[in-house]
Image 1: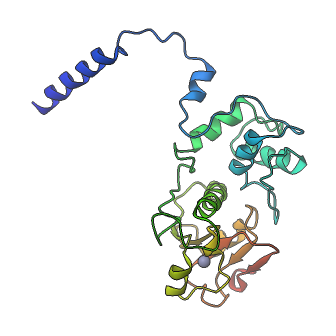
Image 2: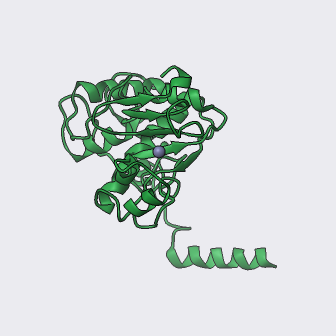
Length: 248
Ligand SMILES: [Zn+2]
């Protein structure tokens, strides 16, 4: 009975909107792109390009900077961005020419949710402190933007370790949340660009070691004080990698 009512409701809705009978014509590449609720690229991007579309691309490939490196999110498609695009393409079995065209964008669309987060991570996982990202060391908007970049790095880390679930136990903290958990006074959690990872199926050392390739300049894990039960990854100026029990 409920099913019958639903069918009637759906039929009524379709009749009302006219979508059941209108012929939309052949699906084009533009239609596919337009179905992405987050961001749509309208041109191919290669070295020398600049603009907001380049910056949006840089965010998506920020997990592919090469060992120990970080991609600048400056909207300028330089050599480092090209190398990151090549690594992204290689990681997903695409033709690795360093040019972001339809195949690369299609993969990105498949990898992202409508809120622009990569499909395997959510803003909620990256903020177990409050709902509005306020009270940190940067604006709420900046903290959330930093967390988005962190998630794209985590997506790359997850993919490199076999695409198995990755456990995120927290990310952004307001100053008061940070104090409440005894976080360092300079903790990157207050900037939104840190994440604490559980062992998951990968294990702490595999996570800490692999994280070195995905844009994290701060990696703290087993053997570092108070980090025997998680791996902390973040972005900071300069490099601080320490997980002595993992050879780091
Ligand atoms: Zn941490």
